[in-house]
Image (cartoon, rainbow, N blue to C red; front, side, top):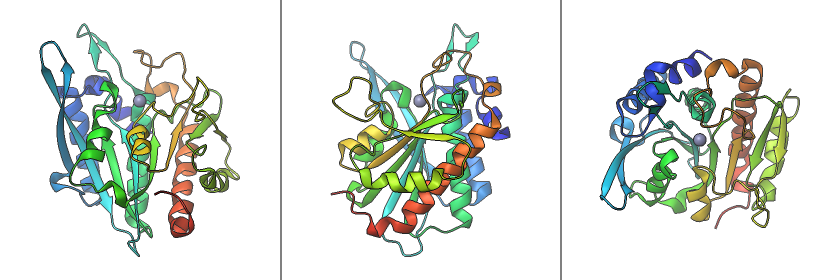
Length: 278
Ligand SMILES: [Zn+2]
């Protein structure tokens, strides 16, 4: 909870990609990963990229992904767990968009998972991907999937977290099992005995309301990598300056993190038997 408050504090200025606030957030994460002892997946943890933001003027923006890594015990396959750390910044240099749920919540959850799997070695390799540029169109995840440091054929699974803190309804969606129903079992197992409700759905392409392309799991899906995206329903504070940390209830948030951690644990333990992917 302390990390959630720190990452969504006013001093982070809304964590917009390419700004001082974005850099502050990035340095905060790198410092945490170093302290936890998470190995870097790329030198200095950072993967830089840039992208066009204005077709008329040709203006480009620079983003930086932060990538941690833990080697698997039997080193079979690679799971990428992701969350975007950028948000939409400020308006008129006075209004700060803190982005506590979107997506300090997923970012801090990813730190918690990195902490857990660094001391409890998984069977498979895990990349902890803190993506930048999500709010500009999933730019960090797109770059990650195209980049030379990653051979996407080695990636067996993506677990993406975006807005996992707001338990207004005490429920969270696990999206993506429409394409891989065999993954449902592991989420259900992890949800057992938890005080939160885990829902499936929002992933039927024939339905208008679907979240297939709503966050960083989309470039993985496009490349044929199975994904589970965890996120809560939209709320009144979505992309508003009122998306603040005090609206996130610890009971829901911590239980959600535990459920996602257990999902990854079950998937990791059974990954070689799960017939997913290409
Ligand atoms: Zn988001």
